Image 1 (tube, one colour):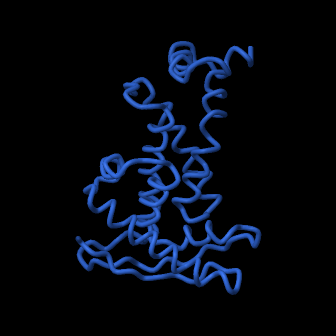
Image 2 (cartoon, rainbow, N blue to C red):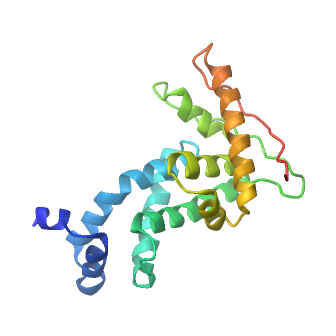
Image 3 (cartoon, rainbow, N blue to C red):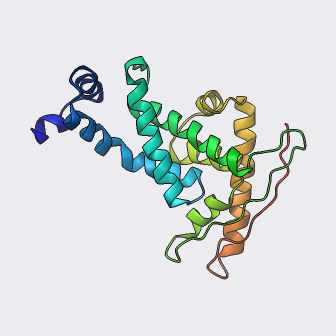
Length: 195
């Protein structure tokens, strides 16, 4: 039975879940997609593990509730990522760490408590302002194009490119600062430029 599920497409598993309430089909979908989804959400939330677990659970709840409306124009993993992005942005807004568009500045991000064994790169990503972190993760980690990022985040393609530029510049600064003492550095405030 397990071997049969492993060879089944996401779409067929989703149909079995919708049609028959097949728990094994759900478990297989969950096993296929949760690891990558969790890592993505964890980065988006700057390493807040408990919060990331909550967001992943909420992502699956929403996905199952809306599965019958999924049109399969993209991969299931892409759709799950989109749901995860929206939930992460809601969490970050609640934290008050969103870009203040009127002022054109980014609120400083305080580094979360991190385990000593985390690598500098993960710490530096966690220190990025939310907007920079979203674009950096979607582009450099998940492989989305600037057009896809703009569509998912509701921003212009040029804004995505600009935020990626500033994210990478900030990462270089954070990682450069961190090489001497083994730490990624402290929170950085960057101005967001419109052009």
